Each structure stands twice: as structure tokens, then as C-alpha cells.
Image (tube, rainbow, N blue to C red; front, side):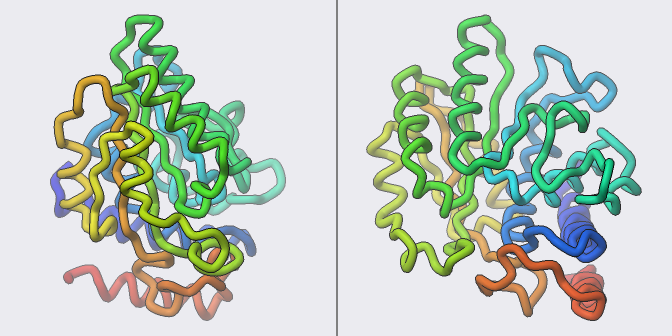
Length: 274
């Protein structure tokens, strides 16, 4: 897919996210909107997956460690062809395959069920280590949030990834600076995150603007350092694309009203030709 087309798709994914959460009456718009470029670029420019064969043992894997941003994940999977786009509007509804957190037993394309923060990073390490043991060449990608990095389990996983030289593993850090209770610095400062990740043995690429699609693609395309897991540390904007949600902690886990949804969609539509 051409970059211009993918930019248009990212805008459409943002509209999907807003509509889905409004229709559901609950969900997490802030972090879903901040991570659009990271997830979309990974699926549409990097991953070897086949919607017709979602359990292909040689497929690349994706782990949504911050499982509460399932809306962006579902929209990307739908546009990638794993299930009909129309099914997006069933988010969080009774008997829907699109639960509040992704379920690998229900929805094609979901490699692992996630939701408990911190655990997805470890699962990704296990998948990448398994590939090494089996002599398989598939790559594993894991999206984690910056607030999630306050979990000790994550750092043990980073240490293991480095120890086992998992250069078939890419971590994507959605660093939007906010979490459910306030700013990261207020809750538990992460300090010099770049230096810490490097100290744990990761090959870090820091992006000043993780919502810049071209920058994300360039980082993903940078050749891996042999024997080192990659980490793309992306500064993003919580609620990106919807001005009244941007950098507002209150939109971490709140559904828009119908009026707010209409205003958000109008704003995103107006940005079409920018």
C-alpha cells in the first residue's frame, strides 16, 4: 500500500475508533487514537499474514500488550481482511467476537488474548524464543504503552529478550505521556526511558513524532542489529486527530456522546486533504 493511501486509511481507522466506542458506550479512545500509525504501519508495510489462513504457523505475530486499545486493533484487522468492517459496530456487545479486550479463541487474526497489563510483552518474548528454537523465520511485534512500563514484569521480559538475542522481535512503545490516573510523571516517572531500554540490551529507535507515518515506516524498515531485539520508542499524542481529546487524560477510558462523536468525525473528515 502506498504511503498516501495508508495515511488515508489511518484517518479512516480513527473514525472507526470513535464510532465504535460511541456505539458501544464504553472503551478507550485516547490510547487507541495515539497508536494508529504504529499498528497500521506494522500490519500494512511489515507483517507476513494471510487473512485466508490466519493460523499459518509461519505467519508473523502481533501482540497487543496494551489490550484495552482493542478498537484500533480491530479496525486494522478488519481493513486487513480478517473479518468484515461492518462487524466493528458490534464492539463490546453481547455475543460479539469483538470483546473489550482481544480474544484469540473468538476472532481470526488475534494471535493471543491480552488485557492484563505487562503480560503481553512476556508473551511476545516467548513467541520469538519459540521461533528461534523451531528454526522459523517469522517476526514478532508487540505494542506496549508507556504506563504499562511501570510493571516490573515488562522489564524482566526485556532482559530475557536481550539475553536470548531475540532479533526477531520488535517492541513498539506508545509513549503518549498519560495514563488512567494522570500523567506518567505524576503516577510513576519513567525517567530516561531511552537510556533504560538500552541498558536492558534493546536496540532503540526513538521517534520524536510517533504519529508521523513516514517516520514510523522508516523505523520499521531500519535493518535489525544482529542479536538484539528492536524497540521503537514513539512519542505520540493521546487522542491524536480529535482536538478536544488530544493530551486530555479524561479521554483515557470514556466514550464520546453522539454529539461529540459527530464533531470528531467532522474534524477527521475535514482533515482529508491535509
